Length: 610
Image (cartoon, rainbow, N blue to C red; front, side, top):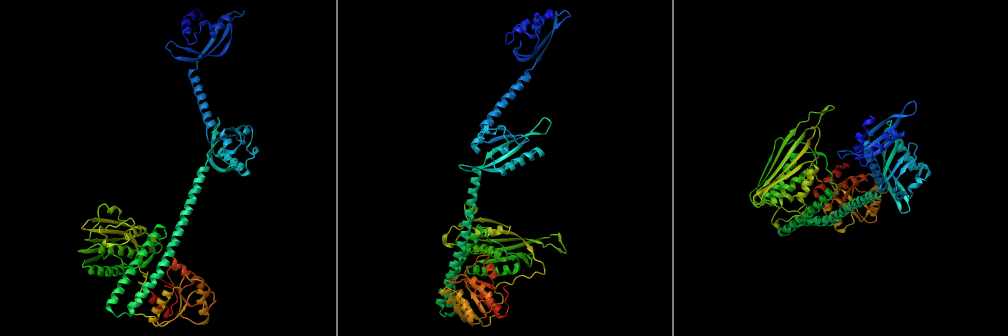
């Protein structure tokens, strides 16, 4: 009511702006006939709170035009004003972030016009942001493929509402720059995609890092290949003189009658064998570390393998005055599928160490087995059963110090305190890695001065009953001797050639020699032979090239027996020589039993390599 206007006078007077009551819109409308719309003012209330109000007023007149009242609306818009202020602050913050961001920020309209471009784009692509205003992506000289990729990404975002990612490159005066762009939808009021926001980050340094890593990886792989090639060459270079040494010792033993001389030669032979074992250990470790160690999968007789191993190790234990105990579980199957050679190597290392590091007492080996049935059917045949094999090797030797036990499987680590035992410190490292290659486990318990127990757990498959295990190498050699053969020996090393000739002559064979592959072809073209023993690495023409030419009919009988006689003895070498047409493979140093086996097979007329 107008007569109560003065009651509010104090309140208005106490406001932040000290507005008198008659200055308010409804007062002006009543007293002066003024109309006010959306007049916004800030006030302070009695309780100290500050408010923002929207003030509107219109006068009401009678028929004669006299003002008889006023209609006023006062609305508290403090919350709205605070929200607007917060929005303005956020916009300022976001704009500051966008304007100062090192990433490129671009907004595209549905028709691919630039709605906003931040200043970083100039540093990235060399075009100032003002140049983008009102332009479409095809109007600034962007590469066609980049335009097409951006258009596809924007279209995909508008169609699916899902974010998209694009990687692209830009050629600048300082080189190629690489970028990764994320496309994100900006929703319109109706829920559609009004525009598309993109944030592009330069990833040139990341790409350079990836390229550096790739080059580093390639260099490492090349170094690994070089290492493997070096090892192959070293194996060849070491085995070649070792073949001569061991062969000459063997020849000397054959013709020597003096007991003391035979004893000396025996020591020399054992030393050569030990040196060859060291070479093999180093090669095995290198192959494992290079990831080139592969396991064979063939049928073998575990019981016969264990009996043979126990006979050898037991003999060594008896020579030291040790008790040698063994027990093989009756559940161990007659046939298993796996790598017999590597399993024998594991057990030889462990049992050999037990004998080596035990001065008195005993060495005991226990083998237990548990057959794990598999009921799943495969066609008409049930799947092979699995066998859990546990090998426990216990000794009463010097034991391992507690501080060395955790590192016992590391390369070049010796568990023994006393240097008298020697060795390379590689045996246990190779053993552990071979066990792990077989998906097995090896554990050790030891007390210094009381002995050690090594336990190996493996899971192998049983072999089907119809599978026939390979015969152990050398079996039956003593009973089967090769008939006399006419042999062409292609060997460039003078000592190895002399040694091979003498060994073969002692066995009644007729020998003709050639220093290289070219001479071998010439000899084959002139004379007939039963067999060619072909070295792989020779001057003028190597053994592989000579074999290919023989098989092509360039010299004599193309079907003549050809056997590789080479110091290349790494895994895969045998397959390589068989692939070029050779019938069999003998590695140096020559194993006399293996040589006899090959000669006996060829003498019997069987040409196929076993």
